[in-house]
Amino acid sequence: MSGLEWVGVTLLIAGCFFYLAGTIGLLRFGDVHSRLHALTKADNLGLMLVCAALAVLSADWRIAALLVLVWLLGLLAATVSAHLIARHARRDGD
Amino acid sequence: MDVAGFIDLLLAIGMVVLALQVVSERAVLRSIILFVVFGLVMALAWTRLRAPDLALAEAAIGAGVTGALMMMAWRRLLIINPGQPADTPRGRSGVAIPVALLAAALVAIIGLSALDIEPHANTAGQVAMDEMADTGLGNPVTGVLLLFRNLDTLLEMAVLLIALLGARAISPPARPEEAAVIESGTPLVGALLAILVPLSILIATHLLLAGTHEPGGAFQAGAVLAAGGVALVLTARMQPGARPGLVTQLGVTIGLVAFVGIGVGVMAFGESLLVLPGTWAVYLIETAMMVSIGLTLALLFAGAPALVGGRR
Image (cartoon, rainbow over all chains, first blue to last red):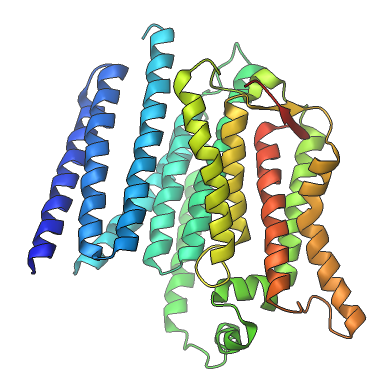
């Protein structure tokens, strides 16, 4: 494997680790807010690492730019939906 | 087994397990969420089968719009029956397992016999691929949908219109407060909409234009457009209206009108029915179809004959 491929694979494995951590947090944590905490933080970092890995492995600026867009959109959707779920949970006194 | 085979196996097992959970889950909301997850895994499976057009359609329509429609139906069930939760346990019929076994056996028999079939040298698919060079279109799926088998596509548009009319006939129009889920006072929602809605229009246009030479097309583009509409309805920026204005009536029917108009119009020039005169006709019809599909799906989601401007 070339140096670029090593970088890509390392990023990919790191991303998978954060996804795993986020999912374990989602399953194991007790209340809505802690679960959201685990999901949003870990998964967004995981998504960034996976997108970065795919960008490096593709070695194509166009695909890399699209992957940055994918990550930003994921961030946006995750942020707002987590905010809404947390707000809803607090209003219901959970 | 190589890595790709392992991923395929995981996808296949995942789909069967998810499908089982969708039908056996007691809580309706969990069933709906699992159905959406099933749709996304199915989209991955289509990608692995090198059918990106189907993957896009499955993700946008099968998982996205259908999931949103079912969630809205669940919500309206709760409003209709406030005392009785919509998650009543469903009893299993005694014939369920025999029927499931029978169906599985049938699928196995058909699948195994399909493995033995010798591929015919001159199938319709091969003929269509050979003809693609003359059409000026790069995407064979669009070629089949709009040129070779466009009667099917035309009738699909008619089915969509009939579905909207049927839904309007049987369901009372939704009250504005039923459709909006997210209170408009939430500060982040405005920012999300300001990005999401223009982006849905941009992506829909891209899917439409790309559809003639890459994966994409009117159905996927219409579903993405509808997603923007769904976001507007959910946040009360658009509210269910009582009667459709001229724009709504035109928007819902324009796909069918453009398709039939051009398809019949060519007969005046001595062509057969539905022989489209060129790439411009494909673009025109697809654009009209995208508008109709997007508006129809958004109206189905709102559960109303029309959409009017709501709160800011």
